[in-house]
Length: 309
Image (cartoon, rainbow, N blue to C red; front, side, top):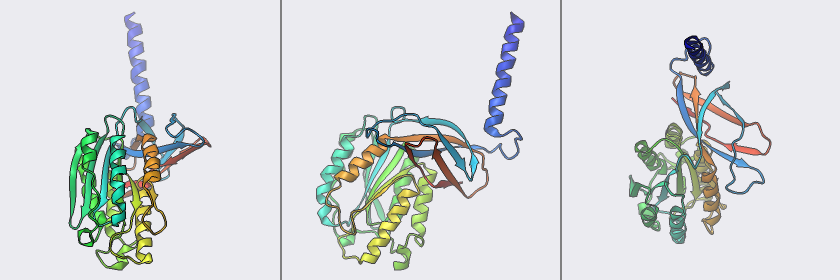
């Protein structure tokens, strides 16, 4: 009997080492610094109900190499940590949307943690720190001031400040909703282009490092702005959202008639988001590109473009 127990133990140990060799690579070279990485992944099943979820099969590659998936936390297992950031110099016509945003916050699932802040010149005015008291968080939502003097030269610096607030929160499902014109003119009009804004790139990098998906809603400011600059602002928000695993929402170059359809789609996306953790075997510093492909035809996956070590 004792011999049988020893044989079983040896088999268990051998199996464990075999599993570890798969996870860390058989040669062991360069794998000792393998690091778990968590990314926000939104899974959409075509022709399914808005909140329907199921486990799906997919292939995850980092820099072209297949990686080992460690876990995936669903909405039932990991409450959402959500920040709402509104630019304070937006067109005054969006004042009526403050009530819709407050109701959106109140209707988040129990256990969700929400922060509310306003992007102003030189500062992020946090009206509610992260809290799971959703009614209290909703009370922190107010209409933007709508004054040109309240506006930032660059919303991305304050978005980075908002991202830093996630450092005190549990790792898991995370997102930001940004309502902004997306316009960076801190270094002149040339910096307003999505390929030229240094702080846009910094915001993307910091969001990817913290596993935060950013959803953005474009609204022009109270000050008159040329169509050219509005287009640049939209393009910046599109890049900010697409490269972090979120989505950008526009209604032409003008103020949206209503946020309601945008908030409904964002809400459905948050309910389909999982926190996917995998073992990254690439140890070098710099940007590592991520590619997640579903193995089922009726599945669509949205994820960050990668992350920077």
